Length: 604
Image 1 (cartoon, rainbow, N blue to C red):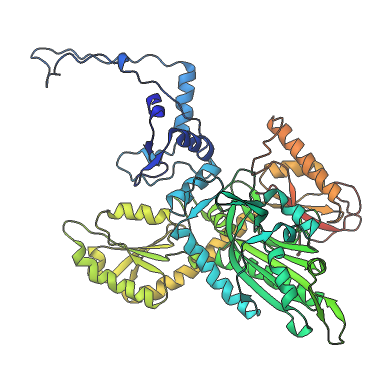
Image 2: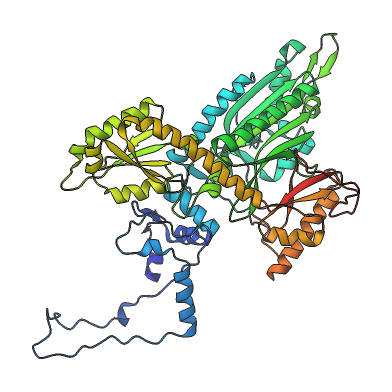
């Protein structure tokens, strides 16, 4: 209503119906256009257009009046019909059916992937939007997933002799700019603090985009002898990178959480071993915790970490969008930072040596990748090992079977599950009916729902409903904890198998350029023969050529530089596991003799 735009505040219900949001008209329009991606229609409802009321409307028609005056509906133009049809096709029918819960997603995953993702993470209570673009509130449901990853990872790195620590989030300009290649790689994303209160700082201070330049002066102070090596530290912290591309929660944000490991070693062999051990932990996080298959490999020279010697990575694949995403990286820094920050030590012969270093990091991006890979048209589908709740018990109450009849029975089930180490909850809230609870916990992705009704009470059983696949089974309550424990492992394995089979079906080899872009259009990851990771010029050629052909196929002249995703292909990695390279095979771009296979894809 046009008149609302003149008000000070407007109350609305974006993506939910259990809370109101109060915004200025300007902020509401900005949210609709930028966050929701829709152009609102503004209508003028003028009081003068309404017919005046002439007295009281009679409660019934006068006797003998049999006429039925039907309202006159103006005929629709072709444009109106098209608009109406388009509007209906974009709306998820589940949301508008009479009597159904209003928890349903508006968008199907295959219909509008970006809007589906936004719906899922908000309605499942993973995030809330914040008033600074690119920054988001991690609600307890998503933060618990991050905590479970932290708990597992801390145990693993301590086995490798890595200790946790914490360093300040601010870095001086002199320190940040000490390593030229490093700062050039991050310069466009650095956020600077220039004022304190009303006064201007004597020198600007950067908010950490990464911690090499913060931690390594301390390394130089602490490391004096070969007996001080290896030094292996990790910190859990936040990072700020002021990206100018369109933000996407979890995947591309201006502030995010991560762990970053930093180590110093007496030999390159020891450092390289650390790099590979850290990368394998990242592979395990994705494959063993998140049930997501990844491809480990080396980054090319063009894609490696700024200032580093060599970068390793694990790359994941997102169904529906057909895009790859960098899962985590582990860097061999060589001696470059050691030279810059004077990280020297006396070896066993008393000679001065420069330390070899590594750095490696994993971020909350993991959560977004998990949502995209496993989620469906109902909402989240959580792998049991990272599910905040692995099972939820829902009593089926009615007028003939009140909660009091089922309460003790449900409490006993809960106790058995907790004793087995299964993260569980009894949802005995009286303000919601069982149907609402089913929809709520399905949307939040809880792996197993336990339904308990009067018949279950009589038979000493309970019904299990599996979120992944929808299987329903009745189980004896005496063995329910063991049954669920086994079922959770089965779910975890099946989720990984499904994701891997789908990923593998979209992994193809291409040896001729004419087949390259067509395979990108089929949402494939593409393996091609390559003349070597050092050929940055030919790598750039493939990127621009694939962009040009993709835009031409789509009938477009260009793409927005601020867009978070591009139609161009980029190198993902040179996989550790290489297919056989036949003698005389040529690079797909340069025509030079191929030295390896390289993996390409459109990427987030």
